[in-house]
Amino acid sequence: MVDSGAATGSLFEAHAPRPLADRLRPAILSDVVGQDHLLGDNGPIARLVKAGSLVSMILWGPPGTGKTTIARLLAEQSGLRFAMLSAIFSGVADLRKIFDEAHAARAAGQGTLLFVDEIHRFNRAQQDGFLPHVEDGTIILIGATTENPSFELNAPLLSRCQVFVLNRLDDVALEKLLARAEEETGIALPVTEDGRAAMRAMADGDGRYLLNMAEALY
Image (cartoon, rainbow, N blue to C red):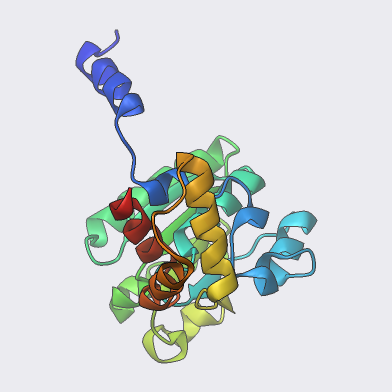
């Protein structure tokens, strides 16, 4: 039996307006800007995907540099279920539910990539809770943090993950985002070259913030 309310909600949601930053989310890893040292042809993450040997990892970098997007694309390109938690809003019950679902999916032949945003916010006991599920392959864990993982994450968890450092977006990467915004909207940004430079400077390496500024100008 179909829940007509849910179906209607999904229909309206599909046509709901989406923020510019969301509309411009890359569809493939090579579209992610500013992280060629990780995602380029010879980058370590790109090599893991090509080899079909994705491992648990920690993505360490400033806000707006693509951590969530990279995790989603890794799941898609590796054929894994994507599950996501925020360490700010999640507790033990949420973790237990995720692990139970991942075990059930594994029994059905489906792997799970679990993305944990702000993973450093979990306490030591919560971080330890990931260990058996990472060790037995129930989940591929990708944790995102803006803090130095060497100081904020348990040594046992770090020893089971590779740490990759994301760069703050430089002027070239930020300008690519502005060009994509203009292509998506079909409208040139109503600012001078000096204005574009000022926007890039104000963004301070944060692509999401830059696109939010751009959207406010349209």
